[in-house]
Image 1: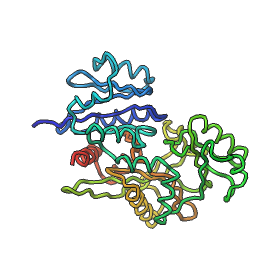
Image 2 (image 1 turned 60 degrees about the vertical axis):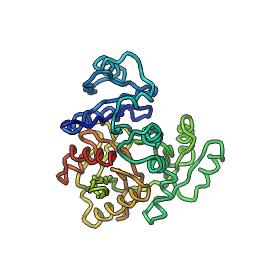
Image 3 (image 1 turned 30 degrees about the vertical axis):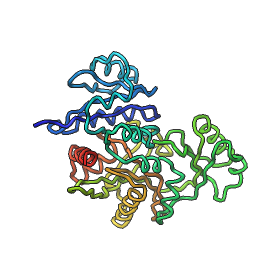
Image 4 (image 1 turned 45 degrees about the vertical axis):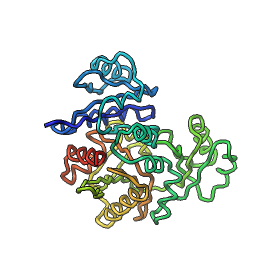
Amino acid sequence: MSKTKIALLFGGVSGEHIISVRTSAFIFATIDREKYEIHPIYIDSNGKFWIPTVEKPIYPDPTGKTELEFLEEFVQANKIMIPSDPIELKKLGVSSAFLGLHGGSGEDGRIQGFLDTIGIPHTGSGVLASALAMDKFRANILFQSIGIPVAPFIELEKGKSDPRKTLLNLSFSYPVFIKPTLGGSSVNTGMAKTAEEAMTLVDKIFVTDDRVLVQKLISGTEVSIGVLEKPEGKKRRPFALVPTEIRPKSEFFDFEAKYTKGASEEITPAPVGESITKTLQEYTLQCHEILGCKGYSRTDFIISEGIPYILETNTLPGMTGTSLIPQQAKALGIDMKDVFNWLLEISLA
C-alpha cells in the first residue's frame, strides 16, 4: 500500500516557536504511519526553512533542548547542509502540509497564502479565517454581530491617536486587560488598574506591534473548548468537544501559566454544569462558523455571573500530548491519531 507524502511545518518566527516544536513532536509521533509518510520541515526563528535530504527524516526529541541545540540535532540527523528556499517545498512532491505552527505568520494567514500560491493544500483554516481570528478587534466585532457576549473593548493604533488621552477617557471602567491585537498565546499581555499602568503596557507593546486591544477585565471562571470536524463523504461535520476549566496559579492564564509545567490546573470536563456546557458548545461552534474555520479551532471564554464572555478563537491551537484539545478529545474517547487523520483527509479532499 502506497503512503501519502505529507510535510509537517513547524517552528516559525513567532513568540510561540518552542510551543510549535513541542506540538509537532507529538504530531510527528502520532500520525498514522500506515497511511502517511511524514517529512518534517523546520522553520527557524529567523524564517529559514530547513528541509531534510534523507529518505526517512528524523524528528529529534526536543525535551530540555535550547532552540540552537534542537536545530543542530535536526540538521545533522537529516543531513541538511544549508537552509532551503521555501519554494523548494514544491519539489518534495507532498500531497498536503500539516501545519504545526502557532502564532504570528504561522497562524495569521501568511503561511496559508504561501502554500495556496504554490499549490500545496494544508490542514486547518484558510487565509481569511486565519487572519480574522488573529485580529482580535475585528473578530470581536463579528462575535458581537451574532449575539455572543463580548466584554467592552477599544483598539489603539500607533500613530493614529493619542493613547494617553484615550486611556484617561475610556467609556468603561478599570481594571482593563491589554494585549496586542494580532498577538497569540498571551505574549505581552497584562492587566492595568489605572490609566498610567495601561499606558506602560501599551508603550511596551508598541515597541513591537502597531495595534493594541484594550478590554474591560471580566473576572470569573476561565474555560476553553474545542471544535473538531469529521469528514463525511465530501462534507465536513463540525462538532464541539467538552470544555476545560483553567485555574492558573498566577493571577492570569498568561504565557508562563499556559506553558510552564504545574503553573496551572486544567480540569476536563469543566465542572460548570450542563446548561453552561451546552451554551459553550453552541457558542464555540458559532465562532468557528462565523470566522470560516476549517478542520478545528479552540475558543476561550470567561464565565462571569453565569454568562460566558468570549476571549478569542485560535485556529491552530496547541497539540502537544497535554494540550487542551487532546485532553477534551480523550474525555470523549476520541483518539488523536483519528483526529490527525480527519484533518489530513479534509485537507486532501
